[in-house]
Each structure stands twice: as C-alpha cells, then as structure tokens.
Image (cartoon, rainbow, N blue to C red; front, side, top):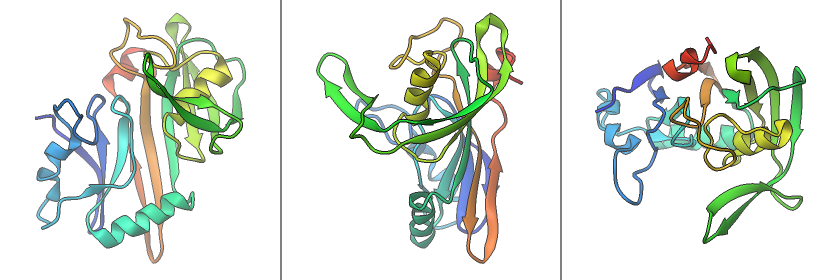
Length: 218
C-alpha cells in the first residue's frame, strides 16, 4: 500500500500529501483509493478522518482531513466562506507570456455520451476566479505557474489555464492531450492555510513531487 505522508497533525485536523493517481473515493470500477488508508490515518483516534475537500485523482499535494464531525462542519464552513488559502503549482504545456494575472470565467458542467462529462466556460455558469503568477520557464517550452483559486469549482484550474494561456496543463487528457513526458495532469496542491477561531491556523506545505523536479520545476 502507498505510504501517505502527513504534513500537519493536531487533535482535529490532518493534512496529508496525497499521492498523484490516488482517488479520494473508491472508483465505480473498483481499485485503490484514499478510503483504503483511513484506518491507518486514525493514528490512535477512534474515528477515521474524513476528507474536507476534493483533489482530482491526478492531483498531488495538500488534502485536509477532519478528525471529528464538529471539525468537519467548521472546516466546510471555512471553505464555503472562502477563508481557506490554497496554492497550486501547474506545468503549462507551452509558453506563458504575461507574468501574472486573474482569470474570471464562470464554469458549468456538461455531459455527452461520446466524451463523458467535462467543465466548460459558460456565462450562466458558477462564478470562478483564479489568480496566477508565472514562476519559471522550463525546457521544452513548458512553464511553471502558481495558481491561487478564489473559488473551488471542479477542474477550475485546468479549464482556466486552457482558456487563459490557450494551452492546457501538461498531460491533461480532457482539456489538452496526454504527453509522453508525464503520466498524469501536472497539477500539485503545494500549500494550504485554514484559519481557525481561537486556535493557530492550519498551515501545510507539500514538497514538489519527483515528476515536477524531473522537468526542472524544482
């Protein structure tokens, strides 16, 4: 079983470094998921922790787990009220001209028999805002970009990147193309800050994964 590294731990919260390729929920067709690890993540507590938010299966990095129902409710509220600060690193499959910017494009979910479901930019969709900063130009015309989403829509960074830069994230099979250089969509949840009333903030940073380092992102 894949080892799960713990980035933050106290009586009500865990932040883990979710490995790329590990879904949070058991897939319909079966297979490994984070649920297989919840027993070992009790770490002496009676209850198994619960994931507070979602990361795509391909996405690695910071994932907040609540260790009791009260904490889960409080953390959910913090996410709903946009108090949580999330930072992602993504490798864009091409050059990025500007140094920084904000992408403000509403998103909506569509589904078709031929292509399955996906998110699209739609005027009547849900408001979606992502701030970004160019971090580094990499070999092969790739670009390392830091993303700070203000909202938490499904596939938000992936769709916003494709529209803003006219290039998807490297390896994205839905909004771009698979790429022989990588085995996944190159997106990493690098940092998470969750404010708490009367307690220190939950602060966690996930180290850069090996596949990012291999492409020169370190």
